[in-house]
Image 1: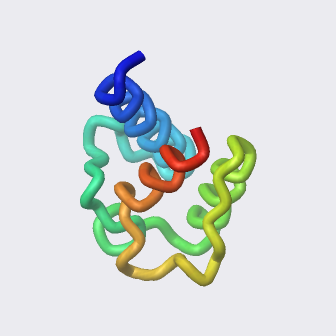
Image 2: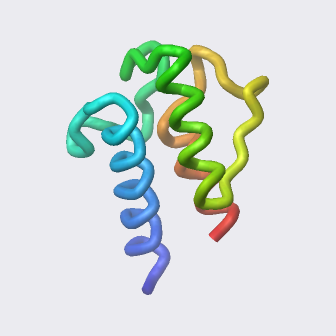
Image 3: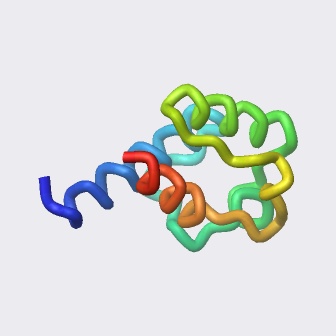
Length: 82
């Protein structure tokens, strides 16, 4: 699998996790979207997302969660562990 295919796979995986957490359709989720500001994840949904990420080996400290944490930031973290 080439880098482009891996990147698309990771983007899709992250979008599907967000969909499972709050129901936003994966096609509506963009890398530049802020989890809190643009996607309107609440604190419970954020914790749920963090737990789902930890299940696949990705750890994002709660201290890194802010209004500026984007889908792209999560994609980057996932790419770092694969």
